[in-house]
Length: 415
Image 1 (cartoon, rainbow, N blue to C red):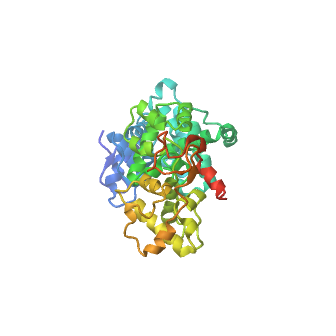
Image 2 (image 1 turned 120 degrees about the vertical axis):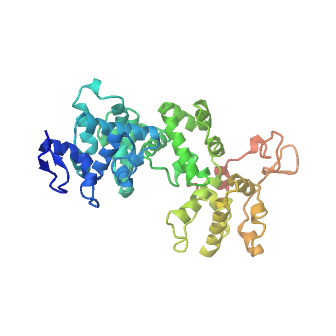
Image 3 (image 1 turned 135 degrees about the horizontal axis):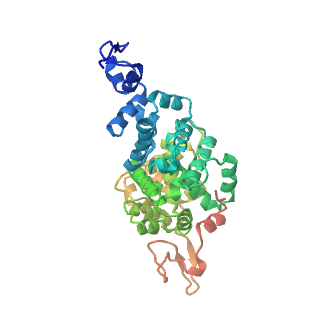
């Protein structure tokens, strides 16, 4: 039967009934009136119809595709929307309303729970593990709300009940050992695609060793792959035993091993604290020209900040280390070795420092430390360039002190 009604907007297309027009509107909206604003739900529906991931930036943001870390996760999300639009006949107008009212996740769950389990397909269980993809405006959340969000994301990823209250999740979190708490929050940040910034997680999980954001993002993707292959207990155990690189290698994830081996094989070197401090000063809004920002004790002693007499000298060291750490050809561990051997000024990267006398004073530190040798009247110096009889730092094992011991001797409180 030929159409008897015209589209009221463009008067170019005929329809046989109102129902026919409503079904066709998802496609016709794009040609009806060129230049009109089109809701992103309709752009999503067009992508679903073509079985293609949406390319429109705002559509990808509105419906969670930008929060997916892998192509497979994006495909799973597209499958969820295909189920709603193509098989449950839920219109883009309704889906748009869900998103605007902030109930998109819950309404998707309601829709799928309303059909037989055998009809939900394989995308739905994956969606339940990744509902955080659809949380909007995370950058605007304050620290407390973001922390709660991370806990809930990790909770869901570990297969716990989505109906659990924030209080129940908080009770579980408080029962975890300190290291497991860090792992739990790290899981949450990975699931929420919030790559860690400077802090304990940034240093403890090796992000501090990355040369740029590309390497940090690659490491985050590798971690996200790993947490799908190992148990939470295995991950916590590897973190505590400094064997994360071994866990990565055991699961065939090798692209970030060089990075991880620099940080996660032993107790962390103070150079990573230095890099965290410099990154905070220059990339996260700490104004070095205002109130001086004192570095933590390990940096204060190891990298010469204890020699600064005013904020100007402190800024000179900040600029110096910023330049060094930003060079792609430098290795921070080289700087660390120069520090603990007391040769910061002679480090090859500092050969042209002027004025020479000022930098020689600023770059002094207490190293290498001298200890009595029980078998000789001569002192033994703690230096990487002076290996001892046991092949370590030059300090007999019975006399070796930890960094915290040394700071205690010098009267510096640990942070």
